[in-house]
Length: 434
Image (tube, rainbow, N blue to C red; front, side, top):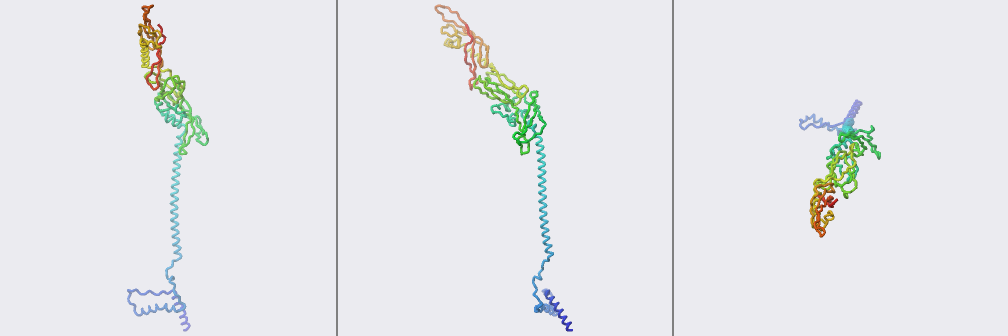
């Protein structure tokens, strides 16, 4: 009995000790619950006194407050941490994938643009050939655009020799080049290279028609600096401007086509040749001296760059106009009248010697000159004039016979600098007899 009792006590104590370690007092009854009955109150009081009884025993330990606070479980913390890492990794991976797609799209667009640009440059370069450059140059000449032709292919001549390389000169041409064609002399490649000091050129055969006649020539074309580093350019080395030598003359201006250029000569006998350049065509050419009211140069046709090209342009002495011829004859008549004047005019040394006397009873003009027997724009000779003379009677000749002094009148024509009116000078009798 005692052993059982002791055993029961030990077991009871052990159970109590285990209960004390995990003991939690029961919660108080709710405030609105009914008053507990007496038996219940006693049980509750006993229950609340149990911790104090166990606290007095050596087996009881004060409970740790943290023991009763909720603790995160390791497996759930790991799951939470893993979930955050997975979300962060998923977000980073999504952002990185979006960036890669953008980069790929940009690269694709750039490659497409590069391909389109390459095709465009290839197409453009296929039209930028030596033949096309030559055709463009010939097109300017056919259209009469000398200014554009000179800008594209510099003639390389002094400015004073380019006076007729103008649109005005070509506008007055009666014929310009037409129906032109360009072919490659050899079948080699363009060899578009600027690496050497003297890039290899391309020789082109050029054919065009001028006034219905075919003309063949050549043009040398070499590479020039490209546009935007990829678009080919070609430079034409040869010009179709042709040299024309102007032979000296008495004119002071020359008009070719519709372009007039002053010609400066030291004097009418200047022997200085002058050089000009013209583009292919057939041009009317006129020369003038002073005012065109008094002199005329014959019109000429100048062929440039054709089968029968002219290399020299010249004029003979100009022809006097009818107005100048009339002026010559009028001044000759005035001279004859002056030589028949007894107030001293007849004593002019230029008058016939038969009238140069102070002992004349009769001195009168019986015939004035009526025509010009020989003339040019700068000198003339009239037909015969006649002055009747009779000396004074003398002791030895009471009734002197009259004489007829016949002579021609010669003179010269000059155009003073800065004046449009000619002057008749050097009037004198010529070939007089009586």
